[in-house]
Length: 127
Image 1 (tube, rainbow, N blue to C red):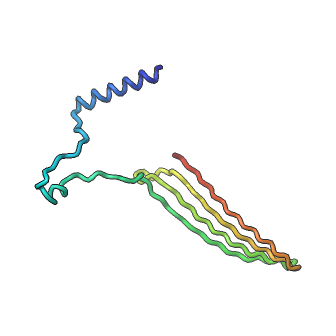
Image 2 (image 1 turned 60 degrees about the horizontal axis):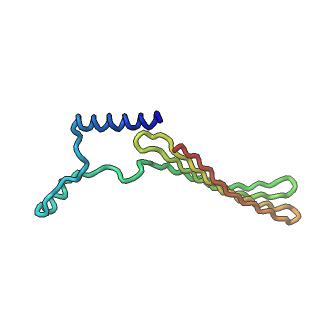
């Protein structure tokens, strides 16, 4: 109940302020059809059609081969992609997304082959 009355008060106060300050209306300015191309060039251009975000991307790829004392050979590949999203105006962190893919192939001395693949996606969002 108190929240509704508070909202009504703030709406009334905001309406009074806008009338007192004489804020311009948000209607588009009218222009005549005979103005041609010059009339269109003088119209103000509004900023922003996007979300006001910027993204920084980073990709890494790692390959390694390891052999053990018992004749085991392990080949591994790891790919990591990272994307960080920030507000464009104040560089405040919005989101981090990390996608990693790992492939491992182990060959033992007796001929046994073990293949392991894993993919993971980690997303942290502060919206």
